[in-house]
Length: 352
Image (cartoon, rainbow, N blue to C red; front, side, top):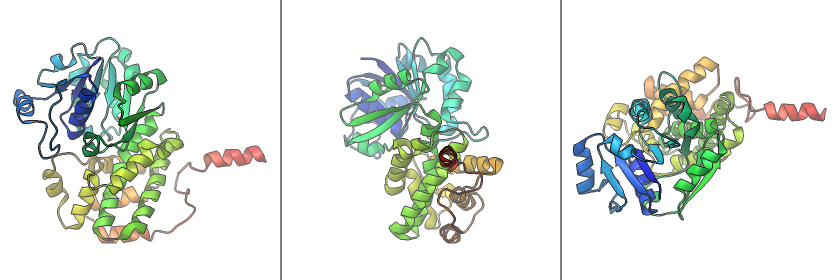
C-alpha cells in the first residue's frame, strides 16, 4: 500500500488520516510541534470532536516533516486556506518523483484571491505542478468517521491524475468521482460557505424552510455566475462540489459556517464566535475575498454583499436578511455581468 502524508491536524485532516489508515494504507500525520504529536499519540485525536475514534495501527503522528514525506506517494494538505501558502512552502523542499499533491482546503487566499491549487502551484517546482489535484464535496467529518456512506469529487487538469487520486481515496463507504474542472470544483467548495453563513442567519431568525430553500437556490445561481465569469463549467455547480456541498453545509448543525450564522443572530460578536471555535469557518474570509472580486469585476452578488455588510460593516442582521428576501426580482438567470444566458443565446443564434 502507498504511504500518504497528511499536512494539517484539523478535524478533516485527522478524519482523512483515519479513513485511509482503516483502508490499510500507511499514513503519516504531521503535527507542527513535538508536544502536539505526543498529545495526539497518547490521548487520541480529539475526544470532544472525534469521540470514540482510536488511532488505527497504520496511522502515526510525527513532528518531523521530512519523516512524514519520506517515500510518500501522496501529500494531502488539509489546513486553513489562509495558512496554506506557508505550509506548502515548507513541503516544497521535500517533494520528489511523481508524488501526488492534493489540496483539501476550501477557501480563497486573502490578498491574491487565488484558489488553493494556484497557491500550491506558486510555491512548487514547475515539474510537480501537473500532479496537483483538489478534493471537495459534501463531507462532514463526524459522519465520515461514523462510517456513514458519502460521496466526494477529486479534480485535476489531467484526468489520469484525478483517477490516481480516486483510487487512493475510494473506500467501501466513500465514493470518489473525478472531474477535470479544477476551477469549478474549488470555487464550489469555497463559495458555498458564504451561503451557509446566510442559511445559519435565516435559521437563527426563524425564517423557515421556504426562505432557506430560496436562499440556497439563489445562492447556487450566484455561485455559478461567479464560477462562469472565472472560467468554470456551470454544470460543475450542479454536482457534488457545488449543490451537494451547498446542501450539506447549509442544512447540517455540524457545519461551522452555519453555526456562525446562528450565533450571530444571538447577538454574539464575530470575534467572540470565531475565537471560541476549535476549527475555522472558512466562509468568513471567503466573503471578504469574493466581495472584493465582485467589486473589481462589476459582478452582481447580492447574497455575498449582504453577508459582507453583516460581517464587516456591522449591518443589522434582520434588516439585511429582509432586504435580501425583498430585493427586486427579474429573470432567475439575470444579473449584472452574469454570463449564464450565453449558452442559450448561442443555441438560439444557431436555430435562427
